[in-house]
Image (cartoon, rainbow, N blue to C red; front, side, top):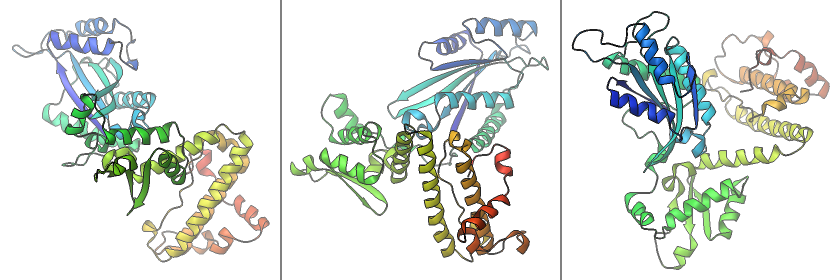
Length: 399
């Protein structure tokens, strides 16, 4: 979920602040669109406006809006500084795509910052968009109230393309910003005093980021050696500070999701998987290919059992086979690529056979489920040849 904000720059003071912020030393990245990103960008935009007679108000008594100051602020959970997928490069690419689609003829300067407040950190791209349309020679419309809703609609579309979370009206959309230390705990930390809840957060972060634990058992074992008991109940992960418990404090067990939104069970499992992949990347290429093929077969076998249990379920609701995450370089290996194609093809055929109300799935297109996941090696190899390889010819990644 990305938040879009816009303010019209008409005063000299505001313009100076925007220029100072974009040119500031704390920017993680900068870029330009239809203009070179250097320290003179502000003067160049002013010259452009003067050439098109946009350096004065369009009508008497009106303010002269020179620049649109837009901010694309990303959800903290989705930023790489909090373990998400939106790295600084990805945030800049998102902003460039935004401008290419909606402001292709404007001069734009981008600056990416890591912003932080009492609730946590996130990335935000600040954009200075010159008012002059270079192609039409007109002033870019700010849109007023209608423009605000239009920009929100544009962001939803782009978030969908990037597979980012969507805003939900009336809800707190950032778990990280909602579950950071409360005011009382912040006061304790601010005074330099010991906060055992904050200590728990630090220990868990160290276990994941530095301990490089690869599964829940390793996670539990490492935390136990530091005096923290980890247990799971009703799909929630809890931590008990054993030192605090021995001291006689009954408030020593915490739901990790409430302690920090990044410690939910799914988030921890994702972190474990990432640690496994990081460890595997240090192995020889051939070994990585073997490991991935074994993981793929294991995931496929588990899905087959799920598919059998879902027999008769409507096609659109029938569980899909999700292949394990695969590094791009592994797709260059013929064995990995062929195994991916085969398993995806087999899964498609099983779904067509077991699901109810299958659209356009005649007998000539569907082989038996037994052939899809059984039979001799020769029959499976023959089956591989008839699988549609169009997805990979277009450069798609396995889903």
